[in-house]
Image (cartoon, rainbow, N blue to C red; front, top):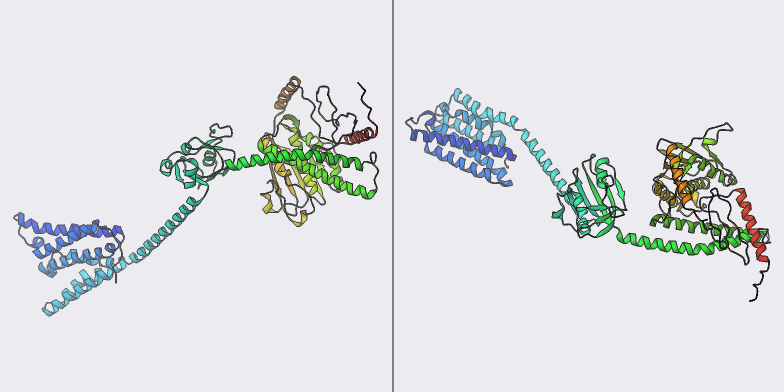
Length: 640
């Protein structure tokens, strides 16, 4: 049987006690030799006992400084037995039952249970030998038996109860050691995974000091591991904004995470490497533990991806622009073909042409969407803020879409003014944003509500606080499955289920709407349950009445100082000798110089806008005028 494995603490205590007691015995032997004190009583120590004490002291001293699992099991028991043998020899030589060292033997017996069988069995053997020797010598009596029991057997039995928990402690120590080994294995596996990740990983503590940097981050940044650890992250991860300027602390993603304990994502920052090279990065910073405890940043080089995206956007923009012209021509000619004032066709052909006309319109909208998306992604999207009362502006958009809702049998209401015939005062919420962008977003959300609501209502409401105004569009339609909500605003994403297979769309409307909202410092989000309808929320910064008046005065002064020329209308097919015509009236007055050439009339409605009855009538008159001009012969130019 192996001895009880003691902790390092108890091993050292055994060595220390045995060493000090052995030195004390040697000192008692030396005192009569150097002083006139006689060698009797405590000082009556034989040379054999001194040799045993010296050997015990030497082994204890050596074992105190030696490390190893084998020594931890064997040497404490060896030291214990050597010291017990030395004290036993002293007791025999100094009067046995009358020896002054009986108390030390009592202490040895009490600690015998600490070594399990390696301590108890020798103690029982020594006691048995002593009793047997007394019996053979004729000196055994009740007092001797009582003394042996008191100084050997009873302390040994007590030690079994006192030190029995050592087995439990030993088991606990094994469990702790096992858990430590498991944690070490997990840490090693985590380090292997982090080192194998292709993205850069950088971990910082609460003070922003780098605690971990993986090989990918070292390769991207150009800094070695030893050069980076224990330095502030700003020295290694040098982030810049889109213009190349240093980040303000309020814009620093790592600082934001340490302060707010919320994940931050960014794909617009530039990182400056050790060699001074600028790379575009995609960065995700996540908190570690409680607020301010630390953060971990995962980043990668997306310079090549951005270049490919720009090339793709340029191609889409060019292709869409070039293809929009023939599509507009096709749409215009189809419009002339179905107009009874310009062409005569039978009903069967009219049905075919109407379908082709709808397809051409859908294709035109798709090209316009692609152009708008391309502009929003490469920074060419214009933003011309104008002060507007969002309540009245939204009401006007809702009224323009009433016909589309009625065609489908739906009820479209604007909550602030829909009070069952009662007089109401609609709230006034001023915003200073691009009116075309606002119209496109609200128009798109309402049209989606109408499109995805088979029956029921679409309600548009507007609410506001001191600094925000929110337009909500709530429908009773199909609703959105929970797993699709997070992807809803992605480019070209459409929900794929049986309810929507017959409903057309490009998957660009919501993506573009969110980009436009973000360009105006706004937000766009949705709350929905599948089969129970959806509610889209569009939030914009609100301005006060005083700010609205000030902005209006500034914008009026700018328009007066710099007249704006009339915007070019979309292309329509033009017959030979077509008469010039002006575009349908728009709500705002435009100062324009006298045209030098004919202005082509608009035959399509700009995205996000609707036509009033007057505009529809004007468009029909334009088409009739063009048809008459096409039938009349052109005058020949005069001969020179």
